[in-house]
Image 1: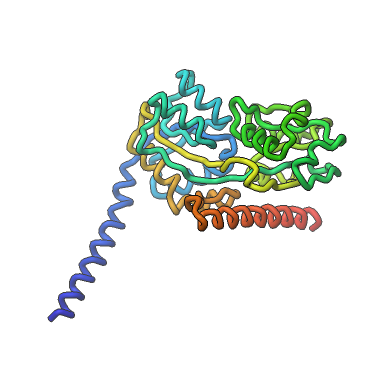
Image 2: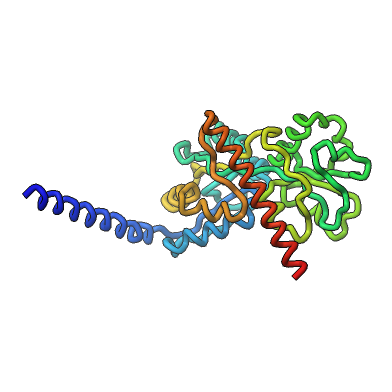
Length: 304
């Protein structure tokens, strides 16, 4: 009798579970309308693919993305100069999100940390300059180094930290050329007309999108700059709160993570306990292996 009772409970639980699973698409199908997203320039290639994955279950939701320097985008929201209502802000670095939160522009419980990235020192694809340390940027043959403008581009802030912690901050300043976003830095180094910028500092994920135009000359140790954290939140003035909240949750989900990882991003590691420190080391090692593998594949394709 007890066995039959347990079997009935198990069957009911499974049926209930399927009921919950089946109910989700029906609920999701009710979501519709536009979601306006302000996102870091380094998400230009990745975010549309995450959105396409989300739309498989939510075909009535569509997106309008504005990409740029996180600081610039945050300043537009703060000043109210954004041309369209913004539903979600997807930033790199905590500062832009902190500034918006302090101004009561975010729905606090929707804020989340999602991804990590790393820095890469890049050179033009045809460069013969060897860079095996941050200090090598001081070589005479490295005439100019492009970084993001630290006042609005978080990548520029991380680059300046890298220089400071490598002991070259004062010496490298005369060489610096400032870009309006991390993608602008990438363009400055990879430009076909570029004849004076010999190196740049960008996110590894951006470098991986342009290995036909630039090469990753050196990947600095991650302990030379602060953790590069991407976070998102829904804005108080969202015009589509249900869909915005749902997609914002999706950004931090296990379904979305593989798409981000495909482009070189990594999940947020565990808190910095001993285990967390090991996790960060593993993340760095995996990132380096991804960079080498992708560069090798590009080289092989060119030879073939």
